[in-house]
Amino acid sequence: MPQGGPLSVVCSNVYLDKLDKELEQRGLRFTRYADDVLIFTKSEMAANRVMKSICSWLERKLFLKVNATKTKVVRPTRSKYLGFTFLKNGSEWKVRPTNEKKKKLKKKLSEYLKRGKAVARPLAVTIKRVNEIVWGWINYFRIGMMKLFMEELGEWLRHKIRVIVMKQWKRPKTIYRNLSYLNWKNKTGCNQEEIFKVANSRLGWYRRCGMSVVNFIISKDLLENRIKDGANLLNPLSYYLVKVGI
Image 1 (cartoon, rainbow, N blue to C red):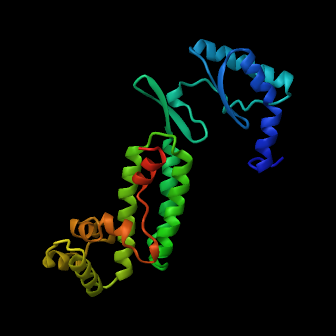
Image 2: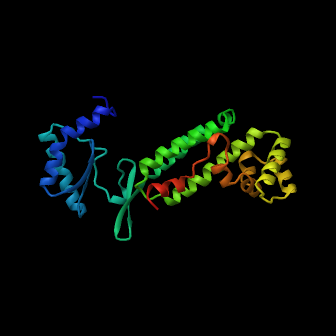
Image 3: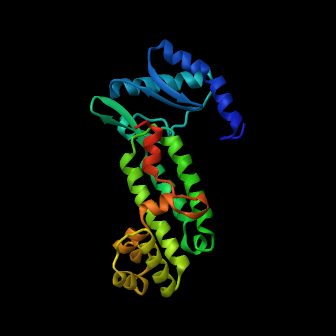
């Protein structure tokens, strides 16, 4: 059976049902998804004893070879399970996405938002695809605590989109004209001299788009609610809070 295939999970659940019953019979707390299992104990000594016993049972009763590199005793805060790790929040245990999964998300978005390719696409197409990626990620990890990361991700995404917008305008005259128009239309109140400085600046695109003038004119509200073709940029924090019912 190919690893990662849809039938692989079903076969694992059928075959490892005996493991579930064995763990329940021993009174152990555990969670299992396919062939990924976490068993919780009260002490490190108990954990080592249970690991040795269960590994032996799997090999003797189910004729399975346990992956020695992945099977280990760790504290909950250092464990990784299906992209999650654990943390103590007051008297309760909570989960959150691992740092590796956060970095992987940003890497995927960075690849898609590379200026050379993104500038060549219509802005609506780029935003729709970015929204799809972020929607999928949040829907999977929504049970985790990640409010701060969602806020940071939103700021990072908006900055990336501003860079693409400015790069698509390209020429200083076009940048000045478009920024001035948006400033007038949305009553942003930015100084025309400041707009002129941004349009004619020799700073790189990334630094230029970090200027307060660009942030005020190509605002959060504009990106999330006023993009043509209905391709408004998703606010990760707002979407996450809705998903967790806050």
